[in-house]
Length: 320
Ligand code: ADP
Image (cartoon, rainbow, N blue to C red):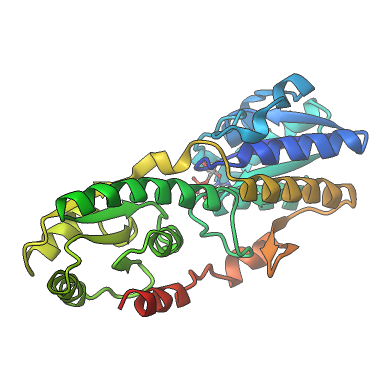
């Protein structure tokens, strides 16, 4: 093997650059060249491919976004485009591919492997919603962005005796809401994985007010409903001087945390080692603090991501 290709696909996340750097540097230290494929599978099919030299990797470990850009390209589900992609990879002398992205992107890597081109998936998404790993690259950074923003919102909530309902990202998963909610001392955390009780939340806020705590915080995952909609529901049960805030895309940007940088570096390096062993069709991750590699097909078809709902119970105990 002489050359490894790298692409980022699907929604971006902090730490993708750290993963790109790790794949390229580990490949270089094993005597291989690393090629960057711009704009995900779209760029792959179009042959938008170039050597990743040291200059391009310089300083990217601390940068948000992805230097390889990302793009949605649903056509890649068609065999015609997968074969075109392989043709392009061969044209550039590339022997194996690392795909950094979510479960959609994993499908592409799986298809390429089945067609004889070894490809490995690294979980890059803020949502933490990929099966086969306890954490995804970007999740920790995203939670920290949310916590920083909510801390600021809490300051003004306290000054003005208001209740803020803050909507965080996560697609269908409640992980960001759970972690950000616990870390900011939310009165309630609303996630898709468990039915919420608006009357109970209103009661808690009312009791808090009676006990002298006249500001409130509810963190809601986008997968349940918008902050505005929850505010409208809450307002039916009392006057909490409520405000709805949606954090939106700030959660996907900015510098990755040290944890995401280290994790991305471990996974990038692991991908290169596995490809050198001639392996493909694998999804990488971390389970119980150990790096793991599982078959993409089995991971996506037979496993689900579960948010840690013990955090909801924990919050109930510390925020009774
Ligand atoms: P994510 O990777 O974050 O889940 P998407 O679901 O949008 O994001 O997938 C990213 C890209 O992966 C798509 O734009 C497409 O190019 C490719 N992809 C998605 N599903 C498949 C599939 N079933 N087969 C091949 N490629 C796919």
